[in-house]
Amino acid sequence: MAEPITGKTEYATVIGPDAMFKGDLSFDSGVRVDGKFEGKLATKGKLHVGKGAEIKAEVCVGNVTVEGCVRGNISAVEKCEVSATAQIFGDVRAPRLTVAEGATLVGNMNITPDAGKDMPAQKGMKVEERDLAAAKAR
Amino acid sequence: MSLLPKRDQRTVCCPKCDGSLAVGTRAQTVVCRHCNRTIDVQDYTISEYFARKTFETAGDVVVEKKGTIRADVKAHHVTVRGKLYGRVVARDGVELASGAHLEGDVEAPRLGMVEGASYVGHCDIRPLPKFVVAPA
Image (cartoon, rainbow over all chains, first blue to last red; front, side, top):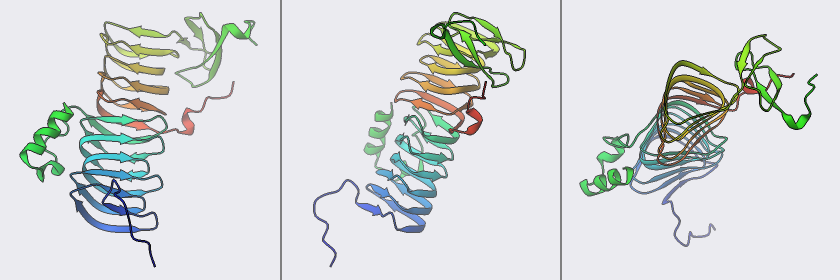
């Protein structure tokens, strides 16, 4: 019998390394993807693309950390973090971006303090949350 | 063969033909022995407004906080702390410090970007074999 999951993890939803998902996914909290994903991904929270993960999707999130491979456009309301093992082929739009040396990035970048405004991921937010995110981005 | 002792030498890459050259540490320009063209090998620090159509050097370029470059830049390594408008091609890498602003396409094997830097443009950052130094 599988062991019950005890203790709190940072991500409420995890797509494991042996999983493959095709379709649209939307969440309120964080998502961690370690497997393969194809489609559309939207969350107000954080997305973590693990090392070895492969994503072919339109990504609209609050925060994103990329360690694996993403093919598609990324829109982040707050921040996009790209680690050394990451590979991104697509456009990135975010108010803040950090790139570690060794990462592969091919696409159009729009990294300006106003880039987080009027994003689809922001539409689901309450007014106070949106103002807070905009203030953080500034 | 170079007559200079090794401690007074550095290796640079010709921005025109990608051939590698051993040059003196104090050299400002040299003639590339692969393509016979004169190349600039100096390091530049820009701390004021600087505009030119193209800005090509085999050395490093640093744009200081108060500096602004309006040019297509081709260099070994580019560090931006101020503002840079134009296409950037770097053999080693491009670094954007906090408060830096870059508008233009970037082509380099490495990009370092910290929080607070802004960047608008197309980028091609990948460790490709085309950036491997050509044998002497």
